[in-house]
Length: 183
Image (cartoon, rainbow, N blue to C red; front, side):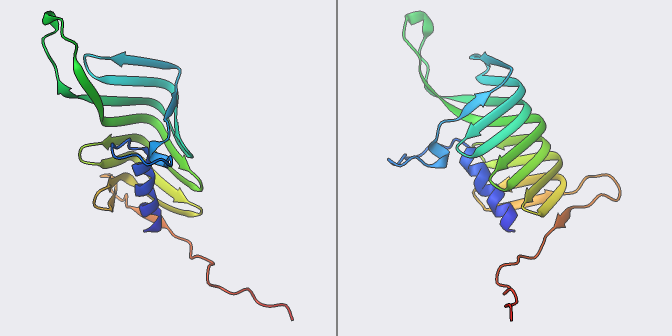
């Protein structure tokens, strides 16, 4: 449960949600740096496609993938372009999709899968395709991990292949155990 709670807070830090910013910079308000072999934008579609060894960083959060697409929705009003009025639009992140060798790392926590989808409006993250999450030695795996960020809920689903099941490997904590004293 601690692993999944950490996963939820990790994704929250990367979700670029809007809100009041304090003077002190928090993880979610730190700048996002994305590097890739190629970037393609489409103002008409409202998306940005990064491809080829994509690395996104925000604070100590790192996401790697073969491709990452950021989809924007337009917020505001659009006036007639033929009348010579400028658009008064702001862009809001609607969805972030990553695919191909997706790996998310923060501190001693790692998650991996073939795809990651984040729906900003519903605040749901889906890591799919042999999804796994590790924290220290603890690990959970399934075909898909779904995180409901506002509900603090997560679901790990098995593959539809016969015999496949959700797996969790949890190592008991050594905290609270006293080491024997030397005589």
